[in-house]
Image (cartoon, rainbow over all chains, first blue to last red; front, side):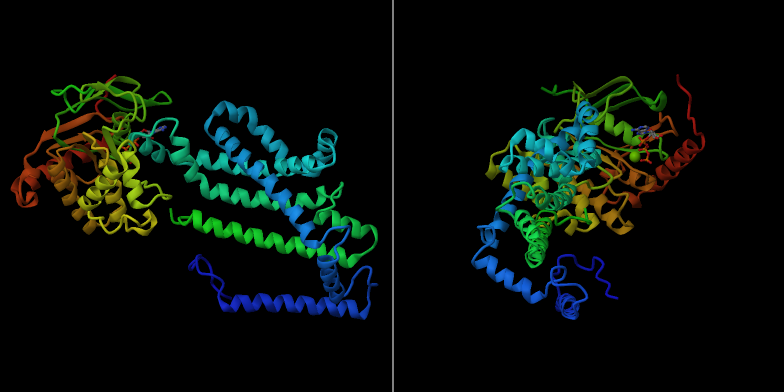
Length: 267
Length: 258
Ligand SMILES: Nc1ncnc2c1ncn2[C@@H]1O[C@H](COP(=O)(O)OP(=O)(O)OP(=O)(O)O)[C@@H](O)[C@H]1O
Ligand SMILES: [Mg+2]
């Protein structure tokens, strides 16, 4: 057992866990290869890792459904990025209002919770009716999926700001209008960033599903097409690519968190 | 504009109730400019409440408050506050914390003033650090520097040293005394420590148990001396104050005034 518990959260990955992780991936690959080789299930169910690798090469060079893997991925990432950008911006603004203005809290608080409990796909049909089947409904869907977690996290954090901070700022000459931006937002930053990480996660799970409707180009669209033609290796490739890009994005957000909130847990 | 001859603080018939239950007062307290008033009293008697009212964080249920002749209508940079916890803004460096109240100054003047304050509070080397990188004593000094930045005429301090160890605490007391002598700021200083109150106060005020009313209000020459603790008057006043505070704590309801 390694006691990595907050010894120094800034320290990067040391050699040992890195090797451990590489080892775990290797074991997983070996098990997969073994299962595929003994043919418990036909290749349509469990293709060999090598087949997935071949698809990786082929989709990257020749493409699939008319687009290369990189193009599929970039389009999906662009949707996530745009949707989250709008969702996070709106979520912070809304959360700030809900946290500060009691009337807004009474009016919009339950609505945000309502939308948050809905699975985003539940309102996809409605968005398709309103906005058609091009980019618009997808961006709207991701916006609606990523806004509530950020709004809720922001509102909670805003209400949790100790009044001493507000009083200190006011007696240092900050006006009533400056306080939300100079004090409330920055002190809510740790929770806001946590909310953003949740939002990006939700957007990820949502985008692939959203792309089942006219989703090509897009990773979700690619997976959908592959499923139609029983190309299981492409489906698995899509899943792996989504997972890995998600890991990467979360890693970037964690890095951002450490840069922006170095006082987390010590404030 | 504040009238030149006005008292630093005028508290007249002030009470404060929470949910219909009186927590403080009525209190009458007039503080002359330049005084160092220490305020002691049992826990829960309303010391923080009184300080908050003078700072303008809340309104009295009854009575009136003035600072330098002006009615207190809300927080104001002329009344600096140091809280029991340092409450430095963790997202800002120490220097930026001190500069928080200097928005109106041009950049060069601001930088100069920050350097001056960090020097004054012994934090010249710490300006670029974040609050979480400071020791408890350094944090409290940074909080004092921040509160002094807009040149408040009145400094309100609510048990600023309560969380410090005895050694650091004594050093901080001397530093605050020196600061007060140098800046001429009027200070209202809440403390749990009778010793601290006698050591620092040119005027020592004691509140009774809840709801707090003033049960002792004495002027003292001790802080002006070179070594106040060595003076026979020190032990004498400390004894007396201890007695008063102990009695006040026992009579929970204090002298009833309706
Ligand atoms: N916001 C509030 N709501 C309700 N009651 C309050 C509030 N603030 C203070 N009180 C009550 O007012 C009384 C005085 O509180 P206050 O914090 O002023 O005491 P204090 O003298 O500063 O105590 P301590 O020495 O422990 O800091 C207490 O009985 C407390 O319960
Ligand atoms: Mg108190």
